[in-house]
Structure formats: C-alpha cells, structure tokens
Length: 386
Image (cartoon, rainbow, N blue to C red; front, side):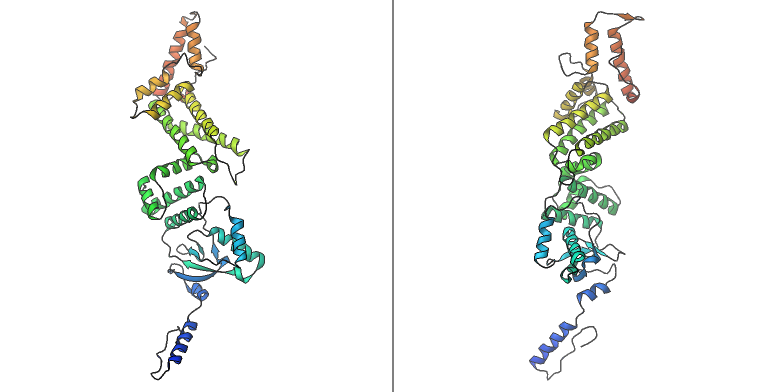
C-alpha cells in the first residue's frame, strides 16, 4: 500500500483470496471523511460527501423564513427517535469563509441537532453527513432555500416576498444592471421556483410599501391594496401632486394601521387580513388622497373606480373632471360639496362685495392653481370658514 492509499500491483502468483484481501486493505487506507473535510481549503470545495461536526455548520444567515417552523417539535421528536440526523444536509461556503452553511434548506434540522448536542453531548448528534456544493453565488443559495421552503412546509406570503426581493437584489448585483420582472421570473423558473412576473410585482410592492404589516399580508389582500394604490397614483399624476408628499402620506397611513393591528394580534402566528380590514385600508387610502387632492372622498372613489374599469388610459382632463365634478345627490360627499350646497341654498350675501358662490368658485380656482404648480401641500381648504 502507498501512503495515499493507492493499490500496489499484486504479485503475478497472488491467489484470488490475496487479491481480495489487497482490495479490502486499499478501501481501509482511504482517508476518513472528517480528515478530508479538514484538509479542504476555502475555494477548493467540490461536490461530494463528508462528515462535519454539527457545531461547525451555520444556518443560512439570509434565510427568507422569518418565523419558527410549525413542524419544529415534530422534526425534533423524529430526530431524537432515530438517534440523530440520518438524512444528509446540503452545505456550501462563501469564498474565503472557513465555515460551512446550509445550502438547500435544512436550517431547522441543523438547529435541532445543535440543540440536542449541546443538551446531551451524545455522540449520535455530534457529526452530520453532508453533501458539499461548490459556491455558485448568493442568488443561487437564496433560490435553493426558497425552493426547499416551498417543498417542505407552508411559507407565509411575506416570507416568499422577502425571498423574491433578496433574489432580485442579488441577481442585479451579480449582473451589474437592473433586472426586469420577466427576467426575474425566468431565472426563478430555472431554479425550480414557480414565480410569475405579476406575482413578483405584488411581492415587491409589499416589500416597498407594506412592510409594517407584512406578516399579516396575503396575496389577495396585497393585490387589492396594490390595485387601489395604482389607481390613486394615476389620479395624482393627473393633478401633478408631489410624489414625495404622496409617498410619505401613504407610509404614515400604513404605519398607523400597523400600530392598530399589531396591538391585538400575535406576530408569531399571525391571522390573515380579513375582508373588512382590507376595505378599511382602501377607504383610508381614498380619504387620504382626497385630502391631498382637495376633493371629496366620494369624488376620489368615483375617479379611482373609473380608472380601474377603463379599457384605456383616461386623459388627465377626464380625471380632473371626475375629481372636480359636484355630486349634489351623493349623501357621502365631503366638506367641499357641503360648502357648495350651503352656498347655493343660502340667500346671496355680500362681504366686501363678494357673495358666497363667488367665494366657492375662487376657492376651487385656487385649488386648481395649487395642483397645477404642485403647491397643494401649502394650501388647505377649511369648509368651516367662509
């Protein structure tokens, strides 16, 4: 036998039994898996099997999962009953790193085995059989964890949204350019993930605008909020409303709602937003826009529904008409409509030569002027004052 375990050629007169014994000796002379793992240097990983101490492996630090696995207790009981982790764990490590981390899921199982080892120091939990995967990039690892989370257990909408945003960010970093939703969908499908571009857009909207209530979101509730948000944005563009003011106002609305809902709900196992709660958010969004646009909530609701149901993009002039058109018969009309109705019904009274209707018309023209020149945040109509 050579030092590296290579098989010496048998003598020409060796019997069949001697040849078999030599083969057995060769198999016993191969390096142990643990030694092979210790000899590997960062960057030299290759596909293959190894044994690693459980405490020498880390959970993936960017795992999209944000809550404890619901099956945690069942998985722990199974590992204890079987006397250790019998299934191999997939691992990888970043270039230059000395420690391995979970590659294709396995964070829950690794955490359980580490807990059992620290609690019992039973040798059955100390070593884990692993499959090493060469490093292929952060996006590759994120994709692998997303796929495994989907396959092994139900994941929250918010967890899938976080994973999608992480995946997009890493791909853009690797490609050094923005990534379209179509490209993101195609890459995800190549990694075994079912991700339509429309679904991806809903995920990213949740990340960008609804983070304070993220754990309570579902696909349906987020889609409804996103649809109303898009309609109101079109109305705001038609009025030339400042986008920063609009964004800040919406962030404040979501933060206030999060404070209300989080005060009465458990975050570890959150219930879903109900239909009534979604409707409440939509009403608040519409009312908030009405304040910014200086129109009535009824007019804002009417214009938003018209934009949503239109088979073409409505011209700005049509949107402005819908927002400014009075609705005397609408019982839900806001303060401005009430001022107009009171002025129309009351006897004409003059104050320094101005009567009530003239004041109403002037108020509207000032509002139009402020909207046109993006001064709406500096001008406010108070219906209590003449």
